[in-house]
Image (cartoon, rainbow, N blue to C red):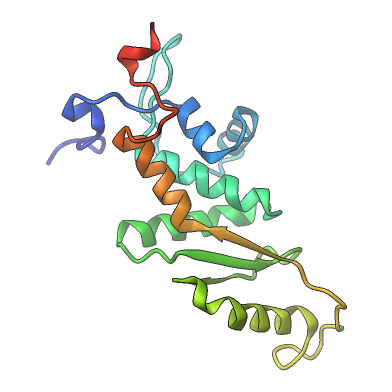
Length: 179
């Protein structure tokens, strides 16, 4: 068996995406990623690097950053998002990752994941019940409106995969970066 980094694009003679590429695909900032790393909110091992050289990332690094960016952008604190991201990475490794995650705004620990758009009405009703206290939790006062965040998990994975396959139109391989 090879080391934990075997099977990377560089092993196939391909350019490796950098941390900057992963940040761009995740639509986040370097400051956010630095905060997540310093706070221990990211768990995947980064590839070794040296000073002055752009840090290459693995597909798992890029997925973790993109998942964390999506969750924090809808108001989930990094401390809560961490366990969700780890679960999503494990499900993705097993080929069992769902397509969408829906969560009521202001309830970072509540979410429902599902495989296609056909479940939106049912999910909205169920989450609305959680939020308003109808049928599911009668101890919660009725809210006049509920706002939901929908994370298209499938699109996140596809965007990261495009980055690693070279199909990302905004990604320039290493050989073209120095031009």
